[in-house]
Length: 299
Image (tube, rainbow, N blue to C red; front, side, top):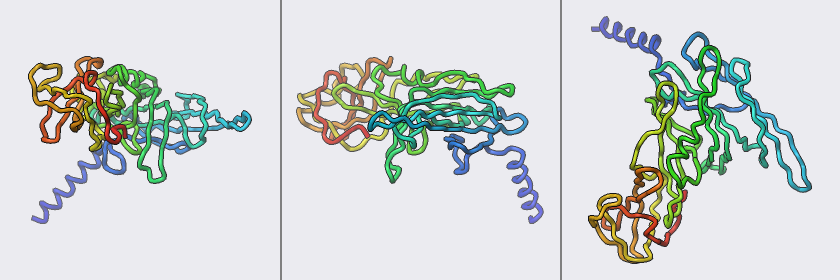
């Protein structure tokens, strides 16, 4: 029995030695934002030695009367070779408008992705409870044949999915994007809904044959939603299906309705899934539903 346990222990060690799991220090899928002036080593193409990656930031102060602005230059190198350099103006030296991430979108494809994000990045309060990253560009680099090559800009893929996108946020505190390690990365879209303030949804892109593509999802659960509620300015009919004609229930003027989800067939025409105080759910056309908002729905 003791010999069997010893053999099992040796086999388990061999599994971890020869088939290591690619993850970060917390055990999650690799999705790391790199700090400036630190040297990182990742085997981006899973071949040979690890690549050395460094983000360098320099700042020049400019004064115009009482106004101080900064030219903030960011340079990214892989194995000492410059792959990206950009100067952007800002008013806060601690708020760099470029962030660099290493992501392993697919744990099985033996390839990591290097993402360079440009945008109005704010990393918020003293308790770290709030931050935003309104991403204008998400440049995707793929390391092949000893060189890091820019493949595409992912931001337009997110933005073109909805006509009413207000901004493209990061997913959560400290993470601009997330991944499940199974071909998918996620961002948080902030969408303006007529008569209903703003809503947040989690949208994904799929990595296929070295390029990211949009998915054709029609229904999205809302995230960051609080128990704030809306009151219609008139009696409204809620329907069983988006754009349908079968009545689910009626909400009377100034009664409460809560938001549950967003449905869209083409990114232009949108319907909201709502819930009443009795727990019944159905769909409404927000453009036809003028409301009052109690509290805030944009968090």
